[in-house]
Image (cartoon, rainbow, N blue to C red; front, side, top):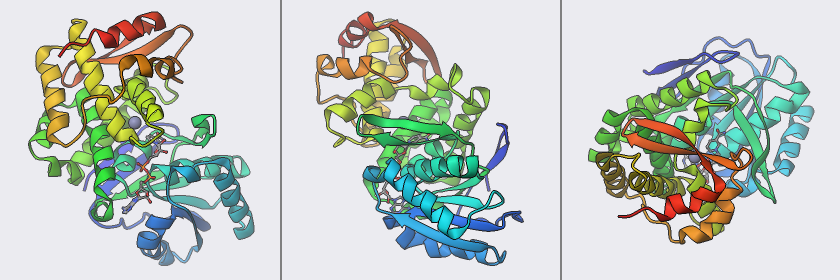
Amino acid sequence: MPTIQVHTTPPYSIRIQHGWPVLPSLQATEVYIVSDSNVGELYLGEVHGLFAHAGIRQYGQTFPAGESSKHLGTVQSLLEGFAEFGLTRSGLVVALGGGVVGDVAGFAASIWLRGVPFLQFPTTLLAMVDSSIGGKTGVDLDQGKNLVGSFHQPSGVFANVDTLRTLPQEYIEDGLAEMLKTCVLQDASLFERIVTKPSVALEPESIARCAEIKANIVEQDPTEKGVRKLLNLGHTAAHAIELASNFQISHGHAVAIGMAMVARAGFSAGITSAKCRNAILHGLEATGLGTRSPYPVADLMAAMKRDKKRAGGTISLIVPRELGQCEILPMPLEQLEAFYEAAND
Ligand SMILES: NC(=O)c1ccc[n+]([C@@H]2O[C@H](COP(=O)([O-])OP(=O)(O)OC[C@H]3O[C@@H](n4cnc5c(N)ncnc54)[C@H](O)[C@@H]3O)[C@@H](O)[C@H]2O)c1
Ligand SMILES: [Zn+2]
């Protein structure tokens, strides 16, 4: 059973396995489990059972599934729930669900009584390899996604891969895109194995490897001052594509297209090798992900230039050199359009 130690402050471990974990002896006096309507229906009872044997006082609250619940109103209703329940500083919040539940519950835990510990029980592939790790929590505003939030590291991450059996295929693909992104950053061999046989991605060892790569990057740079930027591979274009589609194109699918765009553009700029570009394009196609933006580059420019990750007049683009090896390329905004437009096939 893969276990990964994450050396942030405080440190925590990630366990990825078939079945629910036997929880280590908990100091918590009470547990407040947060889930969404879909996941709660399927798994809340089982997770309650994990804490029942410890005789801990517990409560479960669900909110409607989907990104549209990722707002301050949901946070308020959780905080009011914590208050009613009497969640103390020696209590624990558990986020059972995908990235939406993790982000919202983690944020509520980070501000309740100025911060109580929380555990992640990720149930989407994306949450297992990405959003449950690294301590970013938060919600959206009407003005933009993830604008309000905090850094609050979980006290542990427990992923039961069997929950992926009920996850709809479109969300499996979202997670797959982030896994391929992670492999392009640091693991050419896993990239090839997933592309050859996509079901490999759902094995605990593959999920654990991607979680480990993310954890290692986050450990080196918990607050995204440097190397953590690598995780944004494909994301500058992806965010613009999501926005242009009015969020009809999901994040993972947009990341796949964004990666393909940067691989083509990187090749034209003499940074990405032909072998690497071809492997990325072929890999995305072989796993059923897209490689072409339905929108011309010119239509994506305004949103790309507003990227939250921009610093002054420069944006940090992540460009692959070879599979498993990428670089952070500072790009002045005025050169961004030419970089993408130069992409030849
Ligand atoms: N904090 C971070 O570092 C970070 C990183 C990446 C993404 N995110 C955030 O994560 C969110 C996306 O996460 P997501 O893709 O997991 O979406 P999600 O949480 O909305 O889950 C997707 C859908 O699958 C359902 N679901 C979840 N697990 C299931 C299961 N096992 N069986 C059946 N249905 C299940 C959910 O109810 C939902 O309808 C976005 O809000 C994004 O901003 C955060
Ligand atoms: Zn992403």
